[in-house]
Length: 210
Image: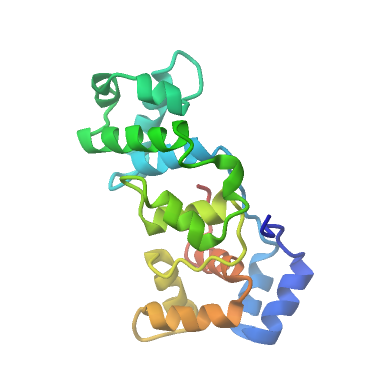
């Protein structure tokens, strides 16, 4: 199993003091890492699909309705597969998102995705496995690595929030591109997730959950 245990706050400070003093100062200001993990893998991915391209409020409403379809029981791959498309559309899901949820459920039900094996796979292997599902892209897979598997070495270079935060923190004239972010990630390695989390906190004080 790949390591997912975050270092202590003291170890994090020591690591960044030796590699990136700007980030080390940021970490001191914001205090200990508070990264929450959500181990309900199937539900995390269902919510990610539901939330695509709609407001947070709309996503919360539709997600609650989606959960309500199953008579007080938790949505499972089998239950979602058995649900009539009309019922899923009735809670506010588009035809496309309904198809995406069915495909995700099929991947779990047919054991193409085996939840118990994900934690033993490399980051790239997890991304490859998840993005084979219709409706799941690289960004969603990277958020899953961070917030469900607890990987410490994830750098989501395509994340607009991270790009904006790095521009602000390092007082760059323009938003950094992939090349610049990867160079920064090399300085943070193997704690790219930690640097990313604190960058997000600088941009938005709200604790991020997924």
